[in-house]
Every structure is written in C-alpha cells, then in structure tokens.
Length: 554
Image (cartoon, rainbow, N blue to C red; front, side, top):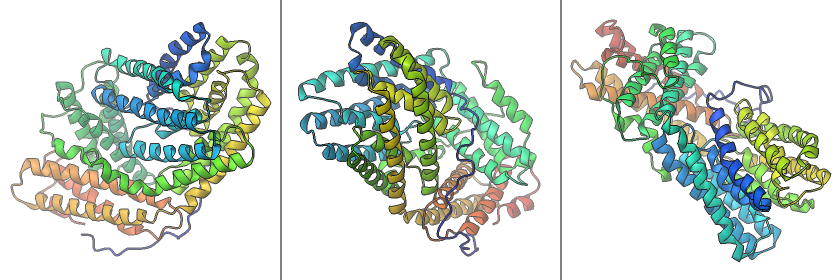
C-alpha cells in the first residue's frame, strides 16, 4: 500500500469551464458508418410512406430506423445482440408513451411519465454502455410520442411500424459483416496502437504525458473489451490480441517503445489485408481481460443513482416550466434537460453550453431551409435525410456542431403530420431550449454526488492491491507465467479505472477535497510495476534482476 497521506489539494467548489467548450476537434474515425446507416435505415420506410400518402406515420417508422445509430463500435457478433436490446428498449419506451398518451390528456401527468422514462433510459444506457448516442435518441422518441394524439386501438399498429423498421435497421447495421467481418476489432486495435504511439512519443515525460497515458490505457482497455465481447477465438482475433498486448507493453515502458512500428501496425489494419504478426503466440487470460465487462449490471447501477435522480428531477421540472410558460411542446424542454447529464457537473455544464449554442444556430438553419422543405413532402423527406447525415458527420467534432443539424431535423419531423407555422415553431424551440438547459443544470447542481469521493478511495485501494500482487510475483524466482500475465493485466485495468474515477470525481460540485496526491503517487508506482512485470515476462529487454525488483516498488 502507498504510504503517502491524503493531500486535499482541490477546493470544495470547482470552477465551471468555458475555455474549449466549443472547440472543434477531429471527426470520429467511423463517423461515416452511423451516418450512412441511419440514412439507409430512414430512407426506404419514409419514401414508402410518401408513396402511400401516409407521411403522418413517419414518426413511428423513425423510431425503429434511429436504432441504426447504435453499436457501430462493437464486433458484429456482439452488435447483433446489442441492437436487439436497443430495438426492444426503443419499443418499450414507445409503448409506455403511446399507452400513456391514449389514457390521459393531462400534460402534467405526461411530463411526469416522460421524466421517469428519461431517467430509466439514461441509467440503463450508461450501465450497459450502449452508446453513442446513448439515451438521448430513446428519450426523444418516447417524449415526442407522449404528446402525439393517440387511442388505444392505434397503439398496436404504431408499435408494429416501429418494430418493422427496427428490424430493417438491424439488417442495415449488420450488412457490413459480409464484407469486413472483423472490421470493428481491427479499428479498436488500431486505435490502441495509435494511442500507445502517441504516448511513446512523449517518452513518458514532459507536458501532456499524463493525458496521453490515460488516453492510451483507455484505448487499450476498449480494444480488449472489443476482442472479448465474443467467445470465438479465430486466428485473426489471436493476432489482434498480440497487437493489443504490444500496445499495452508500450504504455508500460514508453521510452523503450518504437512509435513508428506501432503506427505501421495500425496502418496495416486498414482494409481487409492480413493482420501483422507481433511476437509469438501467448495465452490470453480472458477471464481478466474483461474485468470491467464482467461486473454485473446491478453493480454498475448503484453508482448511477445520483444521475438517475438528476435526470428525473431535471426533466420533470423543465417540462413543468415549459407548461407554465404556455409552450405547446414541453417535451422539447424535457429532452433538452435529458441530453445534458454527463458523468459530473463540469461535463454537464459543458454539454448545456453546447446544447444551447447548437440549438440556436440550428433554429437559424431551419429558418433558411424551411422554404425549400415546404416545396412538397418529397423535399421534406430529402431535407430530413440530409440533416440526419450531417448530424453524424459533425457531432463527433463537437456536440454543438451536431446539434446544428439535429435541431432542424427535429423541427422537420414535426411537420410530417402537417406543415407548421415556422415562426411559432422556432420560438417554441428556442424557449424550450433555454428552459430545459437552465432548469436541467440547476437540478444537476442541486443533486450532489457525495459518493464520488468514496469511489476514488475504493479505486485507490484496488490499484494498490493489484500493484502489490504484481510486485510479489515479480520478486519470486520462478513465478507462474499465467499468474504474471493475469497480474499485469489486472493492474492495467485497475490503473485505468483509477484515472477514470478520479477524473469523474474531479468535476463534481461541492465535493470534499480529493486525495489527488495519493492518486498521482499510486499511478506512478503502478506504472513502474507494470514496466517491471513486462520485463519479467520477457516483453521488454531485461535490465537486470535487481532493477526489476526496484522498479516494482512504490
């Protein structure tokens, strides 16, 4: 265990960031996959409804089609099951909303139902790590459906439309498996290699090395999770495992890593060519690679309780405030509030700023394109498809850029049932955006998350224990190879979890001072032990037995 005493270096009240909130970054490596998938999933149903003269039903077909946004980072075997659950979750939320809409016309009751649905969707998506786009799309569909005119007799037919398009979305998302069956795993491995190369460039020293190291371990952990999400161990998967192992070793000893070779391996993973061979075959401790994934759902739900309360309270109050102002579509305020909630208050604040800026600009974009959309129903469908593609193109650069396309698309969807007055539509959207962001953020501040500090302590304890276990094995004259491998990977997982937990807690509001010095010392000791363990396994040049033992000490 580390002997360092806690050093409370954080002030109880933390500043909310402004710098960089609207900064535009690089697009996601796979932005085109959800962009093309959602267009392919939306276009045939909507064009069919257009031909039948029933575009008023597009809201229900869109519910299923939007499931095509999910699970593009998962291997196809895992994606198949994930998408089934996404479609079922979409149908479940839609069913509750439609039944509620058919049983009552009370806007207060409907907002309350929408807030509870939003909280459930948020917690389940975060606990199961379904995303992006997470809960926002599910909440948009269910909240909008709450205020759609409905009778009980119509509910089965509307759900059938959503189910049919959900099946179509599943087929669209699974189709690339016919061409590139290991594409997601290859991309995840390439990302891990690139992140390890970026950290190797720093040599483990200098400004920005801590951030590069954290990003590297996060990418490696994501790659392991991708590889372990399926049980079949093909020759390709074994080769990818060895590459991820090389990335992990590079993170343990960046000064001795060859960044150029790591990048070359990453580049070779593009396309469908052979996977580069990196070292000899090595047994994979599968039961430990997926430590985080193996945790039960209930164990992950507990820490999300404050987030659930924030979401339910913020969405409900935002909807009630919208009703009090006489806005005809309170679900817009509800959805705005639901979209804000992130891992901590600081990130929630950033998302609130991005949401408001993106929606304001998006309303202006809608004002520019509405004359074109009103040329006919075909033009309306085409505009909707264009904005759905644009949203996925831009949202990975920054959330506010994606909102610039999402906002006019949402406004156009309301016109499938009939053209609206543009001025009234835009005014209500702006009012609901401001109300939802303001009330939703106040709820996030009001509901404190005091348990975040306890989770940092638990993560520190887990990291110290993992380091001690690895250090003991390194000190043994003839340790079991599988035990050393398991200890090294267990320590890597513990350190990645410690950094993620500390970062999340650092952004909370009015949290007791965090033991930041202990976290830094634990990370430094852990990474020295990782390097010593890798040398003991022969994954790095042996600098001598005494040096190994010294490196393993805190």
